[in-house]
Image (cartoon, rainbow, N blue to C red; front, side, top):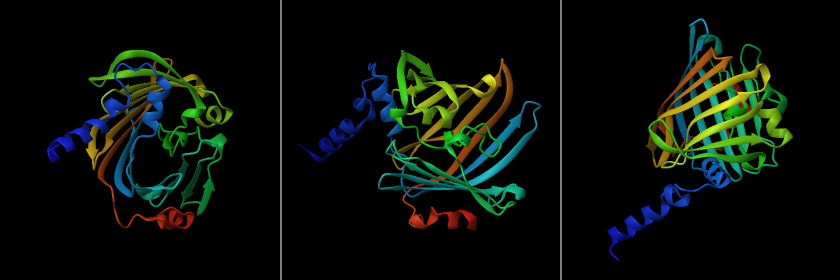
Length: 268
């Protein structure tokens, strides 16, 4: 077999479409593939977050991020660049692959000159005034959920998708997410979430999320725009638009030293 044929065969076998058949009805297997997908290693990026309230008033924040795999999970550091009153505020997350391990998050606010560990009961609260929660910033453990196939041949964002419902079944997931259930539209081509609808228990709200402008960076699918809308009784309460740019992986100066409380408190 010629080299070209070998390369084509390797790409064929590695294709996500062959890991899960487009006709699959196994919601659990699909969601495990989604949660276990490659998120890149030793990465950096910039993020702009625009939060708009129901009156139409907007606030813009910019964030620098760093991420790194470790044996057994992943670490993420987010440091706020602007506005001035939030500069050097940050969030450090340690996300363990093992579901029985408790994911850790620490928030540093320069105005208080204090680092606070985010307790499980606080992870369903808003992250820095956005429509995202602290729990949204970590990877879900499939063992904490019961998955049901709602529709095999759905569509979202112009792509063929599965529509899958996820219900938390452990006390930990129920407490941390604050969601009664979530419906997720999963791309059959990319095995990534295209959009989601979450039923928020507190305040009986609905949260809609769209993951858009997907691009591959060093072989990793990245949504460069995420739009999150929170509603109650059909009325829009707020919207957060996250725009990601300058995504890089394999950055030599991203090291384990970046993911400590001391580094979090040092800021930019």
